[in-house]
Length: 198
DNA sequence: GTAGTGATTTTCT
DNA sequence: GAAAATCACTACA
Image (tube, rainbow, N blue to C red):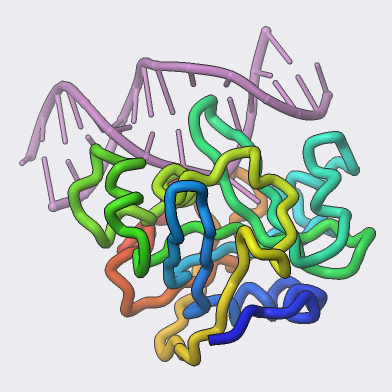
């Protein structure tokens, strides 16, 4: 059990994306400690990636992407949901890894309380919006330092044997890049059988 | 079981 | 004014 250092994030985004699978994200929330095993992520590289928030240059909203790696980038979307990102690459390089899904490990009763509609435990974190809601992550955690003591990622020695690569989901641009990585053996990925349409 | 559409707010053009 | 890195509900097979 080892907290990942900043040097883990200060590398090519696609390397971080692949290697963060099977790691554990931990959130010391005000109502208790939460932990989950990461099973699905997507890479967003600012340079040459039309789907990245930073594709059109720096703005007030995405400035964290350009900042120091190893921080959280959380944004509000579709009026009711948040998405949680890990900022990667060196300062000045806008890139991040979007956490799409995870398996509940610790603090499961708390997650159920945040998402009373979701009865099945393996689906509590099966999507970026649901992950933030079940974890209780809000814009209050935007910009949190992943080497700090509020939110961080641990290596618990898990290896993912069946890593699957697929086109990214929920975007209308640059879907030809297969930058979505997930654990093909996990029941908690957001789309068990990815559809080609959309 | 799968497929389609509405909800709702922040951000940028 | 329009789009967005989504989710939940309804309709239909």
